[in-house]
Image (tube, rainbow, N blue to C red; front, side):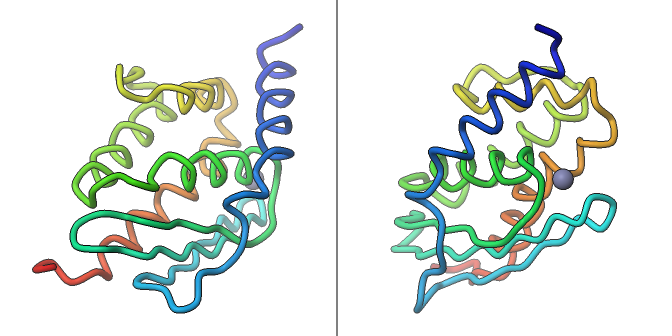
Length: 143
Ligand code: ZN
């Protein structure tokens, strides 16, 4: 199987398992929308934060399998992490999809590394993470 086919298969599989983190938190401490015009991916991310820790993350929206799989992986991964850890993860994932190497701590997120061979899809994989970055920026710094 080609790398492309493997990436798609893995992404779609992950997407099909993603219902647990799909939805909108109301009330939410952060509510952020992200768009990737080059593909048509639309994402809404809501976060609930307790102290400096993300206690719940949900995503909603529509788009290609890669953006949806990346969003599902993102929501699943950041729950339970601190805001600083989430910020570090954003950096690691953005570096990875741009071909700058895979950080040891990424675990199953490393599946997203395959998109670096598909330049048109890098923005799809990165969208949930740039949306998370924007969401984190809306939170008060002195929590
Ligand atoms: Zn896309």
